[in-house]
Each structure stands twice: as structure tokens, then as C-alpha cells.
Image (cartoon, rainbow, N blue to C red; front, side, top):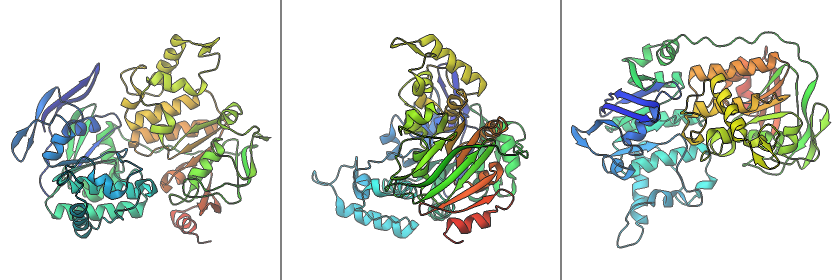
Length: 493
């Protein structure tokens, strides 16, 4: 890519960017949230047209107007948010958009190609399984298979390990090494700097849409130095001062649920106090989703009770828990957090649209809505084209900041957050952690569900581990280690 520039209104997303990828090479593309990484890759994959610059594939200038042009040029992309048809099978997802033979789907040819990919790269999936039954890691494997199935010689991976457990990430890395051995080129976008150092051959760093540096030997470069290049300053993790927790602000008493998201809760009892952060650890699919939805009022328990500030939640539902002082940042910010087709300002006030602050006698107050959004954009450094920008146009990190701003603006007694820094750069993650610690200092209670054990150890006063829908153990911060948590996560006691 030579001299690529792209502007969205007043926002300069990319400015004169050069990027080179060779066969058999993994190039890391680093930068803060909103630095222009995804925009640059969307230009390469044909989702956007560059205002200036050119793209050369194997030395030849190519005009890439859409994803079909990109695929024809041998470019495949695995997006941060998957593009799959959940009601179709694995095989049917691979066949979508392909011409077939004689007007019929070429299932036999597709099965043979799927077998070749499985043998060559150890990427295996049952072709007849419906995509809706696949775990998140398996869905991502299908996205990679889909790109290879269509003959990709250059593979773009946007935050590929953001939703993967450590063992799944290692399986992906083995497949990537096998691909480069076959001569594929890979562009690897990630905020997990340890993984960047482990898998990439070299890195290019973007800041505010421009190339600000490169890293010739990532394995020999510290994560701190990478973070400094990305953010333009040294990133120091926040410190959690000593605190004496107060009264219980939220409690679950022997809560059980029907099966939900693949797992039911079975007799879960937990509490969080004023001025305390309770971390929730566990391997994906061990009840974290059910726990978050119970606390948020989205899932009614089949047994047990939920109390906020000593009062039982009656009637049970999301509106009621919000009225009682619960704030919520869901795991899936794209479908449960924001209405991505709406302006950011509207999405930020939607949960409280009926309050006197934003409406009167059934009519909205557009000025108040826009002023609220502008205030939060300034306070949380949300990088966007303004309050009327489409919510879905924000980068993942800026969308997370917007969700955090929305919830904290109404001063919740207790906040539950799921995977709060997934896909965030180190600077944005530190910003989020500092806001959590500010809440703790103000004697609010927090429940933080995360698969990042380092994050939980940094933030939490106590860490509870879920295993098969039950509490396997609760450790005070001073006693918790990755090894102890890992044992509990696998069912050991």
C-alpha cells in the first residue's frame, strides 16, 4: 500500500500510509484504538475507497472496489466482529457467494477443499454443524477457514485473539505458522503485546492515522517500548490502594437458572461490598454469561434471589435493577451495548430516554441529548466525528469508552462489566481501569468478569472462579495467583 489517505468528514483516519507485506511474513499492525488500523485494512479489503494512494499486489496496481475484488486478488480478512450466517451449517457458510457447478452447490468439491485445509493447517470443523452451535473460538476458526477456502494469499486478522482463551490462541498461532511456511503473508492486528512479540516478524505502528515507527525485531522489543510507540508516552499500570469494604451493595443468594448460553447456574451465592471490586474468572462458557444476565435483570433465576442495597429485586427485570442503582456494561457492545445504526448521542441516552433529563410529555429534548453526549465525549476522550456520528462507526475502544461514560454519568451503586478491555489498546485499558478504581474509591461496588487473569489480579479485592455454573472458590487478592486461579478454573479444589 502506497501513500494511502482517507478522511471521514473532519476526521483524518489515514494520512499517507505505506505498508509492505512479503510472502511467508507476519506483519504486526499496532496503534491505539482509533489510530486508523481497521480503516486501512477495510481499504485493502474493499470496504472503503482510499481518497489517495494505490495498492499493489505482486507488483501490479490493483483497483479494489469491493470485497469480491479483494478476494479475486487473493486477499482475505477475518474481522473483529464475525460475518457468519448462524442458521446455516459450516459447509453452507463456506459456499455462500460461490457459483457452484451447473447451477448447483458443489458440496463434494467444498468437502474436499475443507479436508485439505484441515490437513495442512490443522483447522478442523464438522461441516454439518450449524454455526449457531459453535463456540466463539470455533466461529473464528471458521472465518479463517473461509478466507483460505477462497484462496487467500494475504490474510488480514483484526484482533484475532480478543475472544479466544489462551489455549485457543496458541492453536491459532500454530495454524498461522503453518500458513507462512506455505508462503502466505499475514497482517496481524492486536493489542495483546505479548502475543504480538511472540508471533510477528516485524511491526508497523500507526498513531492518529500516520505511520510513526516500525519494529524490526518484535521478540527483542519490550511490551513497554511497544506501548510507548503506540501511545507516544510511557504507560504505567494504575495502583490499587488499600481499602476497607463497607456494607453489601449486591448479593446473590443460592441462585440457579435454566440453561442459558450453553450453561446454567447452580446454587451461586456471591456478594460485593461498598468500595470493593469482585473479579469473576473462569474458562469461557462456565456460567459467566448467565451470571451477568441475572445481575442485569435480563435472566430470571429459577431459584434463589438477587438483592441490591439490601432490597430484593421485585419485580424482576432490567428496568427495575437500573432503578435500584445497577449500571451495566455488557460483553457484546455491538449488539447489547449500543444501537450501532443510531447516532452516538441517541445510543448514549437510550436506556434513560424516558427520564425528565431527556424527554418531557412524550417528546425528546434533542438539545439536552446532544449536550450530554458532547460532555461525555470530552470527559472520556471519545474519538469520533461528533455526537451525531453513527455509533457503529466508532472503533471498539471508543465504543467501550462511550458505554463506560454512559453508565458512570448516572452514578450507579454497583457496576457489572463483562470483558471490559477486550480489544482495547494499553492506553485505553489503563483509562478504563482508572475509572473502575475511581468508583471503588467513591465506595461503589464493582463486579468485573474477565478472561484476562492479569487484569483481575490488578483490579480485584477478591476473585471468584466459576466452573460448570458453580462457584469453585473465592480467593482474596493477596492469596490469588494465576496458578491457583488456573486450578480452580479446571475444576480442582
